[in-house]
Length: 406
Image 1 (cartoon, rainbow, N blue to C red):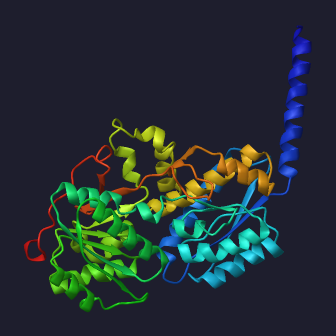
Image 2 (image 1 turned 45 degrees about the vertical axis):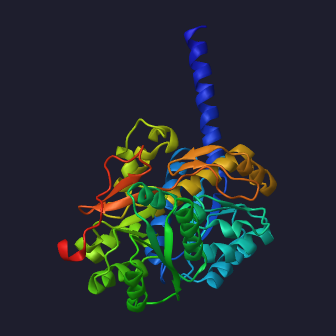
Image 3 (image 1 turned 90 degrees about the vertical axis):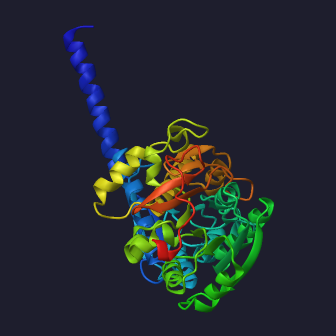
């Protein structure tokens, strides 16, 4: 080919590329709506989810968007109220006509919103909800997390292997913590542990003295608390005051945030937490049964990008929920080749996908069957993975010493 001919072809290709880019830029943005708790009791947990969503959208746009369109994310504050959340999604879908939705935080709010998205046939990845709400015959709601029914697997395995015999369980009397308590009792019995106490407290409780006196009287080796943030801090603080000394103390949800340690200081030492994901996975054992690179694809890049984009902001599993849930939905739309609800639904049901959060695979009811829970312990002001053992860089500090000896 002559030089002149080569230049002509190159110029033509360049012109075509410019036209394609210009056309894509001229497309209206693909609008995504969501509500998240930016105030109220769930605000501490909803905020990092929002950062995860925002970072995922930013990265998607840097790679050219989706279906040739840039993504535009709108997040409203549901004030930690299920009714407010449902109203927001009705407005986003029914009036503003958004193209897709991300989910809110918490099981109760996701449950309320689930009715709205089912009505409008809008697929949604429920990134923070327990399995019970996925058993209501809904067709367009899909679970990201390991079900609440699996949370107690690691803690009971660890307790049994260390010769502990008895378990006390306390929990907020709402859907998710009740499920935690039920599963903790089931797993304990399977591992040969005796359940000495299983008792609920009303949402909003601040004085746990009567309940903790029962825990102390039970003599249980292990205390499992199904909590959110404020109650997790209050229970831990009051355990010290009342000198309640289980050999192993496990808390759910609130314990994973850095503010748990900030609120309690050294009183947070030795406390175990159930967790769906941790940035410490970046430095977990690379060998073993669950190679990190395969199970958490892109985790190092996500961790580095989050710390760069949000310096000083906490990086915990709530952020990874948001980012991972966004990845799953965008991948489903990409595979479907459109926003058609039926096609996106089928794509989700057929996915065996790995995000930075880990494996995603759901059954016919939309319940997560691919992801595995983790257990960590606060050690010297940092969260150390202690279960599953093949990922744990160090053993747990066991047993928990009495308060008088710390």
